[in-house]
Length: 223
Image (cartoon, rainbow, N blue to C red; front, top):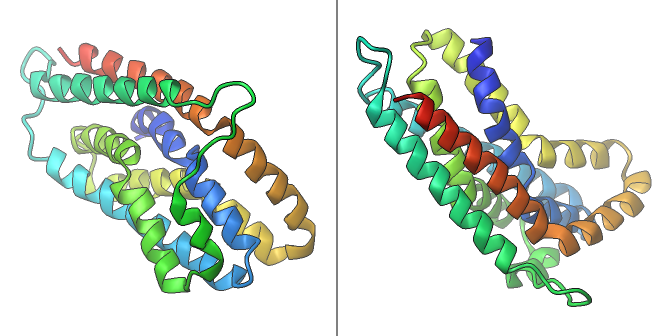
């Protein structure tokens, strides 16, 4: 089980280090309905991750297992394709980064955060975690690893829980910190938001490049 957690750890971190949802939850924490919207967003974010990782783990479990030589060509091809798609997203993010002195463009829906209800925030959190192409690729990659690991049900559940906690921590930690010490967190959260807005594309490009190469390497190792 430890080796499987080690394999999925970078994928979970890849979901956690997602500037857009972090910026979104910070904007919610600085909005008039901070508690309701941020908690709703957090629940949607976690449920989206859970649905994605459980679904792809179950789907992966029906794929052919290793043959007598220890190779698994089907899983190898899937991992290489996923890695290539991650590299494609990395290149797209890098090309889309703002030039020096240029203001980063963020999604238009962020301007509506102040007027969001808890239900809308929950739906947004779910979409950003479960439907976002980058997170979807990472969840599929993790599901392929867990589904092909031959772990028992109990160990698989533990691995999935670890994955969800790590993937969700970037939203979970700011929300909990704000609920505990709202007055102290306002300033640091606003500064973090500004830094993430300016460096979103670069962060994602480097992250996807590293993870994409890692997934391709794991795929080659499966042959």
